[in-house]
Length: 217
Image 1 (spheres, rainbow, N blue to C red):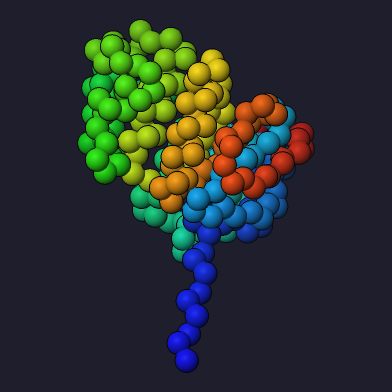
Image 2: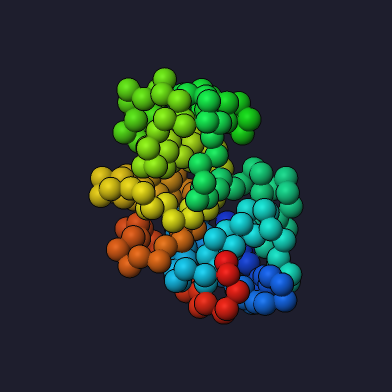
């Protein structure tokens, strides 16, 4: 009798995850998972710990307790570097490089998605014609679109998107949703933080609601 293949582990899993600041709880303990092909929508008001949670998952902050696993294995720094692309509140660009130079630099640093080029990504996010504009000359919305182009080029299967709809108009919000849909269709997963009820990509979604505990997050 042929043994049945075991189910694949979640792309990302957290068990008993907790973070405190100045002895005040920010979140946790939390247990959640997200599989390839789905999104985890993290909701909560300002100060509930959404940004802190993503920074812990990305390895930028150290949790006080709990375990993070990627593809069933402990989330070491090397595994995080290969598996995670993080979109934070601040654009991760060099101000005096052009939009295209920034994307080429980041592709050289982190690699890029197969068959995708920086020029294609710039056009996809609606910045065609701004290739030679310095990053510091872009508006807040244009910087967000350039950040989305960086995410699209990243070869990482797990996207951590912190308030990706901020500073975007309705076409920009629709762009984020299309990108998340395409990323999930390709076998990726996404964690998306939001405090707005309107902002949720139309994909297979789990929910995680964080309650404010008193410590700023």
